Length: 251
Image (cartoon, rainbow, N blue to C red; front, side, top):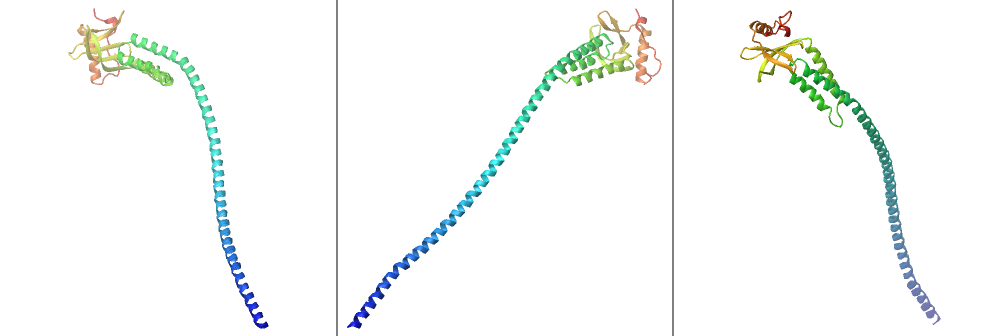
C-alpha cells in the first residue's frame, strides 16, 4: 500500500514537471524571435543612420559649393560694377574729347570745301562728295574722328598730287546753259580744257561768279587744245607741251 502511494506520488511529480517544462520552451522561443526582431530593427536603424549621415554630408557639400558660387557671383558683380563705372567715365572722357576735336575737323573740312569751290573745276563734284562723306562721318554720338581726320589728310594729299600732274578724265560740264559729258584734261590745277563728242573743244575760265566753261572759237587756240588731247591719246604727254593760258584767250 505504501509502495503504491509512493509510485503515485512519483507519477504526479513527473506529470507536474512535464506540464511546467512546456511554458519554459514557449518563452525561450518568444525571446529568440524577439532577439531576431531586435537585431533586424537595429540593422535597419544603422542603415537609416548611414543614409542620413550620407545625405547630411551631401547637403554640407552642396551648401559649401553654393557658398563658393555666391562668393564668386559677388566678386563678379563687384567687378562688373567697377568695369561699368570705368566705361562710363571713359565714355564721358571720350565725349569731351569728341566735342573738342569735332569742331576743328569740321572747320578743316569747310576750308577744304571752300578750296574746291575756288580751285579749278576738275572733277569738282567728286571732290566735294569726298568731303561731304567726311562731314557725315562726323555726325552721331560716337563719330570716328581718327578715321575722318585720316580721310581728310588723304584728300589734301590727293589735292597736292593734282597740282603736280597733268591728267585726263570725263565729267559733266555746263556750256552755254547746256550740260554735256565731255573729256577733260587738267594741267596742274591751273588750266583745264574739254573736248566734246561733236569735235568742239573749250576751256574753263575764271570769272567773278566762279569758273565758266567756254567753247574756243579761235582756230589756233582750238588747235593747241586738240593737240594736247591727241598727245594724251598717243601717250605723248611727257615733256614740253603747248598750252593755252588765260592771258592769250581769244577775244
